[in-house]
Length: 453
Image 1 (cartoon, rainbow, N blue to C red):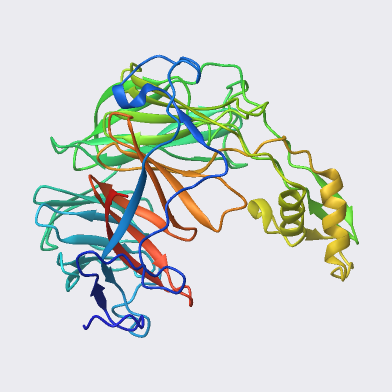
Image 2: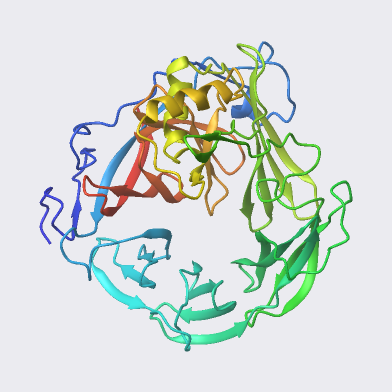
C-alpha cells in the first residue's frame, strides 16, 4: 500500500499541492478551459429568476476551476481488491467510502484514507444479497439498497447487518404501446423512499393500454416505507421523463436504414433536443437544450421543479453554438458504418457476405445523414446528491471534457476540465469522486478537491 504511481498499488494519495492524475499526459496541474466558444451567462451569480437576453445580463466567462487529486483506490493485478465495474458511490458522516462493485455485486467500504474495511452483500436471493447492482445510499447510521432484480428494499446498518427487507409495490403507468415503471428511487431523511420512473417496457403479451400519444399521462411521485409498501402520493408530473418516452410535441427522428452490400445499415440519427431529468429527493432538475438555429443564439435552461410541480428556480445559460464540421460528420458516418454510432448494429440479409470497403459504406451513410447545423451543447449531465449539477460540454475538437458546475441553487461555480473518459460518481461542496480507467481500461476510484485557478 505504498504511494507507487505504477498502477499496481491498492491506493495512493497525492500530497498537498499535487494534482497529477496519475497517468501519462496529465502531469502537473489540471488544464483549465480556454474554449473556442466563449460561454455567456445570465445573472446566475445573483440568483436572477428571469430569462433575459445575453445582451442584458451576461458574463463574459465563468471562472476556471482546478481539480487536485487527493487519493486513488484500486488495483490492476488483484481481482479481490481491484474494480471491474464501478457505478455508484456514497460517503458517510465519518468520511468512509461506500462503493458498488457491480459485477460481484457487492458494496465495498473504505476508510477515508482508502483502506478496505469490509464488504457488504453478494450475489444471491437471500437476506442481504443482491441479484443486480442495487441503487444505494448512506443516510445517518443506515445503508439503504434498492435491488431492481429482486424488486426489494434492504436496510443495513453501516457494519453490514441486515435490519429489514421488503418487496416493492411497483406501479405501472400506461403509455401508448408501453408502460412506465415507477419504483422507489432514494431514501429521504425521515426514512421514507421517494419514487421515480425507472424505465419503460413493452411486451406483446401486454394488453392494449388504450392511451393515445396526445392524452395527458400524469405520473405520480409515490412515498414508500422501508418495507416497500406505498404509503402516499405526494406529487404528480405531467408526463414521464422525455428521455424515456418522447412526448408528441417533440421532434422524433424515425430509425432509418438502407441496404448496402447485402445488409441493412442503420443511418446515424442526429442528436435529440429532448430535455434531461435529474432526480432529486424533493423533485427534479430539468436541463433543456433546444437545438440552436444561428450563431450566438444558443441557450440552455436549468429549472428546478418541486414535487407539487412548482418552479423553484429557472436559470438560462447563453452560449455560442459550435457548428458541425465536415470532419465531425465524416467521423460519425464512419462509426455508423461499423455499428458504433447510436449503439445500433447493422444486420445482414441471409446469405450476404460482410463488406470489404467500410469507407464506401461510410460515404453512403454520410450522404443519407440529416444533421442540424450546430452541435448539442451538453452530452452528459450529472445531478449530485446535494442538488449541485455538472454539465459536460460538447466540443468535438477537444481531447478533454469540459464540465460546467452549478451549485444547489443553480448558480454557476465555474468550468472544470477533465479527461474525456472520467465518469463523475459523487460530488459535495469542493470534493468529488470519479472513475478513472487506466491504459488497460481498469477502473480506479479517485477523490479530488476543487479550487479556484
